[in-house]
Image 1 (cartoon, rainbow, N blue to C red):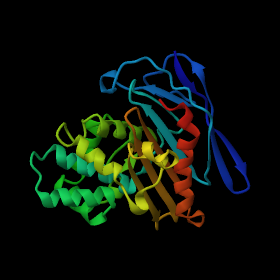
Image 2: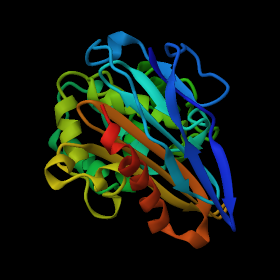
Image 3: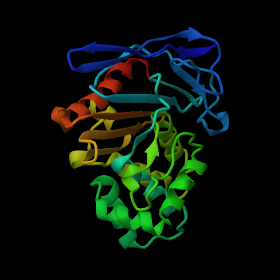
Image 4: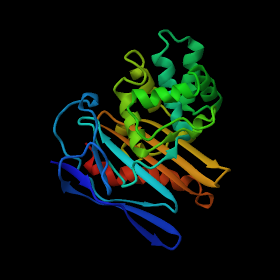
Length: 282
């Protein structure tokens, strides 16, 4: 038996949308998403262990006037649960920088110190110039295509125009899968995985937000993160992408909402997912 999730109910109060997800029990998780809420099974070989556990999640409510999607992957079993639209497309913004680092490290046996320093500021400080550099060094779109292949992503793809790394297309489900891929060594390889996860734990400044913010300091220090955020000029919407990875789970949140709500509103919503789930986390 495994957890299945019912469809998201859309509640409209004034100008705000609330995304509400209810959990329950049902048949074993399917190999493909069903028409309502989602609970899917990943390849057990990619999980930390095969211990049979059940994702029993409380309702999750997000106050977002726009798009909101989230997913949680249990790293022990590979089971994924999340919002009914956990497979809906959005974009990564700076979150993709963690893959740019992993892809470079996996393919480079002995990175020089300058490259390592550039990777550090790209992850910890979300440096954009470093991201452009490693996107090119990884072969542009080819590097993003490797992410899709290596991490077993099903809704992700490079942006249609080469060079626009922040526009990489992803779903919440795939971002959770990416987190597991980073943590289990497939992304950066055996020599650099621990190093990369440590840089993610040391994210600082404006990029230090999202799911791990709701945990006590001793737990927060063990959670690896990478976030993306941008007020896009083409649609006048804030786009946010949040990833947090622990030794047992990988959590993602994707948001798009009008500019008038501000950046902090998105930060609060990314944290709100973890706040509502933390008592039931694997």
